[in-house]
Image (cartoon, rainbow, N blue to C red):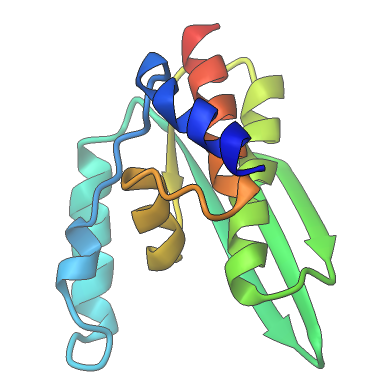
Length: 143
């Protein structure tokens, strides 16, 4: 298994990697009002008016962990993921499945999973879902 990851990571330079923007992360949740977040979010969206906005989330309630991806009129979800971290990763990959079937060409993905976004940006391959996301993203960019 380690040889496979090593081999794949050595060839990752062949893949188009996603751009990850942490603009909204600059504001702390505990000391920033929701109105400020909303205003900053809308400012960010102003520059993305040509892009179809898509959203991911993982949540936990009643000992169940769910992953959801929302794009335009399509919602995809899976229940009983192992952890919130894993649910957030699964939701990102679900979203790529929605994008693959879409006729649109430009997308922006909004996710609140800082740890997963950092793993994608820094190409941390500790879980196969990060590699799967990067490969699928690159495939979509090239097609």
